[in-house]
Length: 85
Image 1 (tube, rainbow, N blue to C red):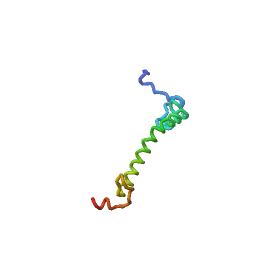
Image 2 (image 1 turned 60 degrees about the vertical axis):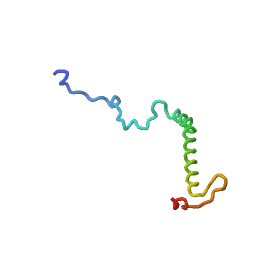
Image 3 (image 1 turned 45 degrees about the horizontal axis):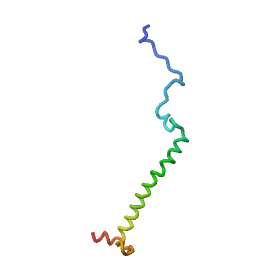
Image 4 (image 1 turned 90 degrees about the horizontal axis):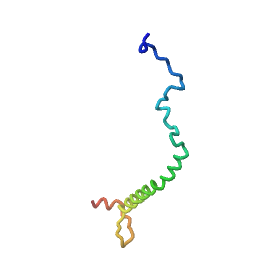
């Protein structure tokens, strides 16, 4: 019997490659602890822009419902600003 016609034998289970779905969620190269430390270092850099964007958007939303100039305090007018458009 030639080498090409010889049937292949099954690999033992410990030598079979693991399917991709079984590798999802594994600790990977650096383990769990180092990833947590990395996220702690990145958190302030990600938190500051989020706070400033949310704070700016909230202030703009509030001021859109008021009559406001820099010299006088804001006066709530509700939807009147949008009715005048």
